[in-house]
Length: 67
Image (cartoon, rainbow, N blue to C red; front, side, top):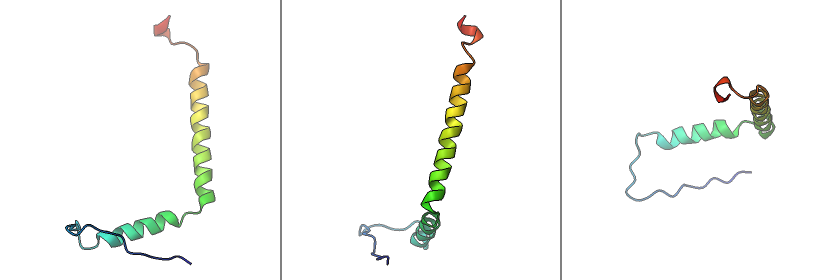
């Protein structure tokens, strides 16, 4: 079970709009609703893609300008 507590806010703080905290809560709820396994898969895909791109660029050899 999750325990909710109120955030500590400075006394002189004035929100940018009336629903600022509600907007934040909704955004965080959507982010936290994504399963961790899905996030890990996305990270692995991105790292693999980056590694492939890096290895392809190093295989091409020196550029014509450096010779």
